[in-house]
Image 1 (spheres, rainbow, N blue to C red):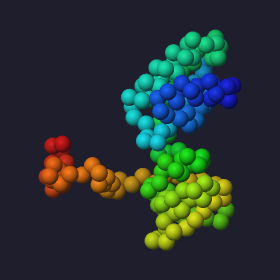
Image 2 (image 1 turned 90 degrees about the horizontal axis):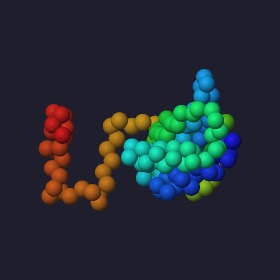
Image 3 (image 1 turned 90 degrees about the vertical axis):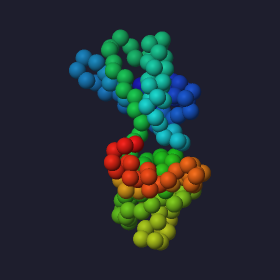
Image 4 (image 1 turned 60 degrees about the vertical axis):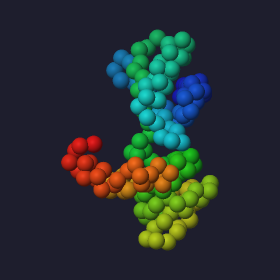
Length: 173
């Protein structure tokens, strides 16, 4: 049933420019729980989750795929807590810090390039190329103090970083 649901719901999700990354169906008491995990090139925001949730719910209500048993629909994004398991995950996380482990590897490094099946990690200032098929587990590391500046978005005439930093630290923004 998972394969059938994935095949049927992927086009519904794709209408919103997102991918159906994962789908789980489990039983909880007298009903089932259908969990849908979304992903996208630019991430997933709450408005997109709400739109996809409504569209999937309408689609499921118009079909017999879920049968007579009641179900709960849960729609969310991948977030950072899920392992990197598909090539697209590596691609979408370039520039992120990742903890990688496998039979012959156990490192934390920054993803600097991905050319399937090889990922290039920067570890201690040196590049390490690893075939992702040799990796048994890869998790994004959360970086709380990481400064990301998109040069295209910064206009020095508009943004005074000292004022922004001061107002942010005082809770005024």
